Length: 108
Length: 121
Image 1 (cartoon, one colour):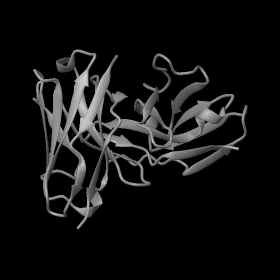
Image 2 (cartoon, helix red, strand yellow):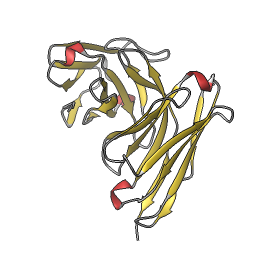
Image 3 (tube, chains in turn cyan, red):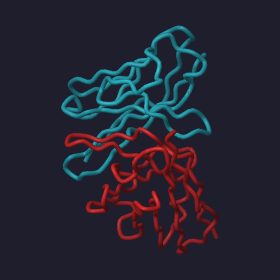
Image 4 (cartoon, chains in turn brown, blue):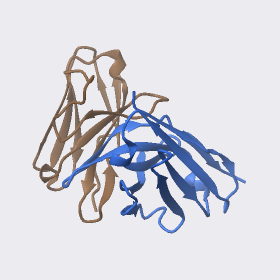
C-alpha cells in the first residue's frame, strides 16, 4: 500500500516560492491531488490530477509529478498561504484513498 | 452553491455507538460518490470509507472495517456513517466529502465543515 511521505514543515518568506514534496515509489505513474487546510478549517482542493487547478484557486498554485516525487509549488507566497498541505492518491490495488503525511507551511 | 453539512457528533464512551449524517445540497447528489475522512486532534487526514452512487460499491479503511458502516439515501440527499465499538483513538473531526471518481483516480472537491466525535470515559 502507499505511504506518501511529505516534509513535516516548511518555512518561507513572503513573496518567495514554496515547494512541497510528496514521495512514493513510482508516484509519477499516479494522479496526485493536493489540499490546503488552514487552521480550524476544512481542507480545500487546490490541485487535482497532478497539475490542474479548480475554479477559484490562485494561479500561484501549481503542481508537477514525475518519478518518485510529486510537488506542489506556491509562487509569491502570502500570509494567507500559511496552512497544512496534504497530497492524496488513489490506491488501485486496494481501491482505497490515501493521504500524505502533511506539511505545515509557515510564512515568516 | 454546493454544501455538505455533517451532524451527529458528540461525546460517547468507549465501546459505544454513534451515527453521523452528511446532508448535501446544490448538486445532483445521486451522481456522485461520497467519502468520510477524519482528523484526530493535531494529526493528519485519514480516509475512512466511500460509497458509490447507488451504494453498489462500499470500501473501508482497515482501521474501521467491521466497526463502521456507511449508507446513503439518494432521495434525502444524505449519507450516514454508523460507528460501533468506538475506541478512544476514534476521537477526531469527521468530514464528509464529495468524491470525484474516474476510472483511474479520485479526489475530493467539496468538503463539509466536520463534526467532532470524542470517545472518552
